[in-house]
Image 1: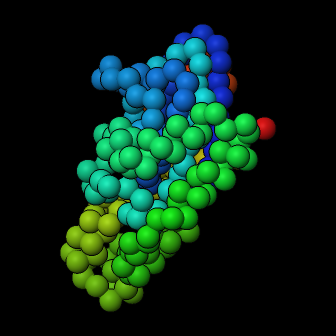
Image 2: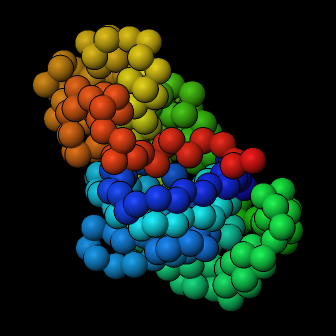
Length: 253
């Protein structure tokens, strides 16, 4: 049900953080200052599904909490909101998880360590009853992940024994996006990972992640990151006030 837990802690002056488009569903169980979203709303604990465009949030002086990256099975099993209703909006914790989420957050705050917090989350998630994905949807998800979003969707539908229309309808219901839109996000995430690794040029990244040409790459990247690939790299190198969600890859000791 879970791809990863990540404990995080940040202190200092307020700063802006670029939030890249992302596939999947996450829970943020924050117990520091609230995050200020682009629309001005203030959220401490919330869930969000796939984000189909970039945004900028403001982080105040003290942030701490746990981010839970859910699998499609975990999102379907744990959350009281249909996946499609979570695509793009930030959903308050009490809406996404109900009283269970509020109780969990109350327990996480006084817990003495990150491992103790993760143990509490284990118990909560372990008590959930799985609402299984259709095997065909699960298989297509795995194929898109392993191919970086490049597997042709008509071929995947054919191999799954479904029509493209039936696959699109079931995928939207169980994952929250049509397969074409989801594959676009997976391809973008693959491109971001390559750029961050500095292992290839912009031209090589565009070619290896399935973009038709540099113009297509720049257009999609600007939509999903809010800047060009070159500007993204420059921000990583030069601007300490712009932080990226993907930086929080591991638990804080």
